[in-house]
Length: 389
Image (cartoon, rainbow, N blue to C red; front, side, top):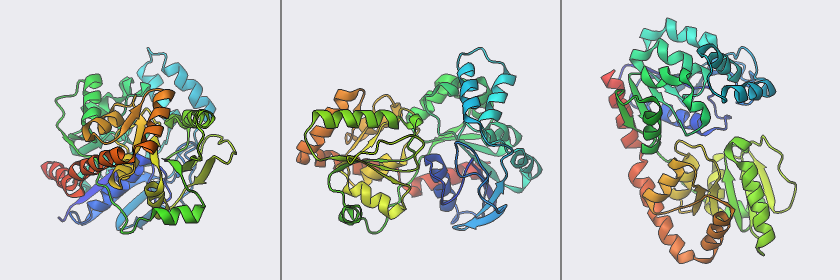
């Protein structure tokens, strides 16, 4: 179709490590067969902690998608932001105070908002990713008649701030990832009048996935795998504590392997292996090689890596306090969720010691992904929303 569409997201690039950002990139690329011009408005930042400008060029093409980059006005002072956040979470904040919180959180890119205003009628639709950040909070209201919001919302304290009402009550459509996300947002913002669709993401698997290749490359045999940002917001510090307790209480040679950029201190012991950021081949090889994949995060709106693990029949255990992750487990009848250390320990040992029963669960999980997270369904739904605009 001879139309221009535009995605708006806080970070975008092959070097960016983040679930929502990867989701945006994959969805933008999957729109290329349908629209002649797919554009992205984003920042020059790679790191979401500092928002430091690291990309030099203002414009580039990545896998056929035209990317416009805007400089972040100032880096985030984490200590000041954390202190201000604590005040905001006490409640009874004014709009001005919440706006200051958005500015302190970043990424502050007023030139991106100016571009939206000046070029509003050049694009058929604007697809905003992540409700939480400055580009979405300030951008949706400027192009509300053409806005589709993919909120990636989860049950976190900041979701209840009044400044986000415009994000959920002004857009033309909302493209939720899951039933649980929709129910959460509607319960808080009472925005049932805003038309919506259930989207999500399609799962792309490499043609060749080789777990043995991963084991040989890194000289690792039996291990539990975590993939993603390694920081406290993902409960990685609790995962490490749980694993250390597990090793004290269980006599086996299983290790914990971490993949992703680390923002916390990782113990330097033989049983914990920090691989840092790895490429897609190593990631999928590692998932296939793992005894199980664990996601300790309490705040997820979908989780690509859980769906990827399910797709390659790797057992999965997740934090049961996250309704979305718990929902994947229940709806698939193919994964485990825990709510405390002893459930965590018991599920690891059940997976190790009950191979045949766990294999049946893994087949259920694989079928769940194949039936619910296919690109052709998601592409058709998003195109339909764009055409309605």
